[in-house]
Image (cartoon, rainbow, N blue to C red; front, side):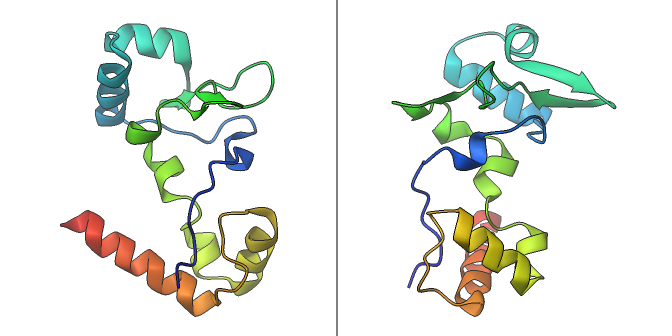
Length: 129
């Protein structure tokens, strides 16, 4: 049983800050969009405390989230986006996981916490290959 399967609902795309992008991600996204890296950073990012973040739009959603087309950079989305919901806070605290399960339609309500942790480990092993 899959504990998580992204529904691309956009709920996790809403809110200010938090989406840090690293240089290799900036390069991949820029290439995907067909623009140079400097233009990407100027148009779609801001810097704070030595880190680069993806901006939110006036509607509060990530600038790359479109209500109809969903994530516009899904194939190259940054690691905080691709890691969701397999965050340490949810993998180590069952109560946090229960709250996320209620809020995120991609988390299978029939799955157990153990199923969730197993899927996270399998995903990490696969990405390490």
